[in-house]
Image (cartoon, rainbow, N blue to C red; front, side):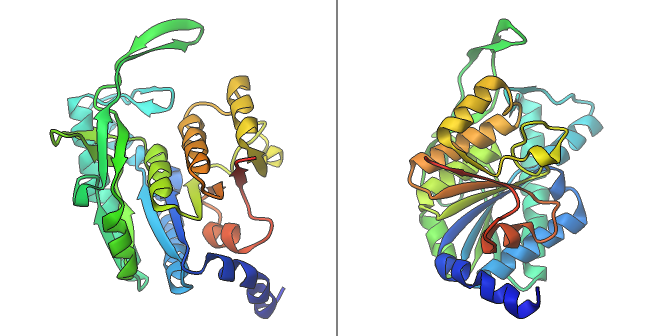
Length: 292
């Protein structure tokens, strides 16, 4: 296919997404690889020049894990959520706000865009509440779990995002919420991205990770499920096909779809031009989740 055909085939999608808000959650090991990270941000800046309004919500799990191990702490997860004590919360804030967010904003600037870094307290963007203790089943046993300073979204005020988008900025959001007493809470990035997409009434949520999408067999890329609905997702969670860190990703997807968002796409950020291929081609490259 020559470049003319490529742009002609992309025309319907360019028309569909013009002026549309698209929330892009970036995370996984794709964000650790500098080449992949650079390509992702370049694609997102390209979307802005094409007339779309991208909003980035980023994670930083691998970077947080690396810093914790460097400081002699062992990361702990339950049901895909990071157990966050006082020291871990300090590390999370240091890595997400002080490093990852700043690096992404710098990359946007490098590629000719205007990025602005935000966290939950900015413009009262993300009001959160502490997630309470839960009794869950782990390996067939019921256990009580206290997640520590893990937060759940209480309210999103998207005004600051609308203002920044109208001024041509690409918002870059760290998923750190704040409660009514001003205490920082660690919110799962997939959950935060879903809540923010719903509040913005985004056309679509793209979740960039380090796997190709949802696979029936995690060791077989050919088992990629390219199209799922909500009932399919619940069934696959029950069967254990969707597990670990993919659970909050899929549950946040369901929240977005129930809020009226058209689709959620889970794609591999390590694939060159993954964002453009998913949005501007008929087939896409990952798993698309729709309501029905």
